[in-house]
Image (cartoon, rainbow, N blue to C red; front, side, top):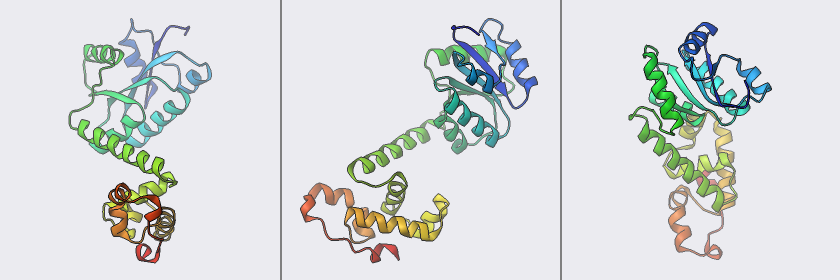
Length: 222
């Protein structure tokens, strides 16, 4: 495929991929498989993926992110909800168009992507910003403490007032695992109770490290 940037067209079936590729005669499009593209270190700047099932789409975008770092992904089709789209955005999806879109819409979308203009539904944008804020808060917690990523997740949910059972259900963990995480969080942050966890950031701003109370983990574990 040479050094020139090109478009890789993939999908749930080779037929869909070849039909879309045929509609892009001047865009240096190819239907080379993702495996071959990764093996040959192809210079791909955009992947157009025809989506049907969410789980397959999610797995494909995960593979692209691992094996072909860099290309933006345009998703064609896919009757996904906002939460599912948010997961795809995190894996590199930058634009989406309906399956029945005309060729000129696809070409316009490719041009917009190359101009760094996202084409995601306005309904998803607030969720994307909320997700970025959530990740930022997790990074802040991790950087200011020695909590692991999972402990930071549990700690943030504790701060939101969730019970251990609710946290276990939300993160798909066993109750005993959540209790263990909470035990470690209290020990590391040297705080006494759930109320201390909720008020942790305010307390840290007001108190020097030497004034932090000794940990009493039993109150938060139950």
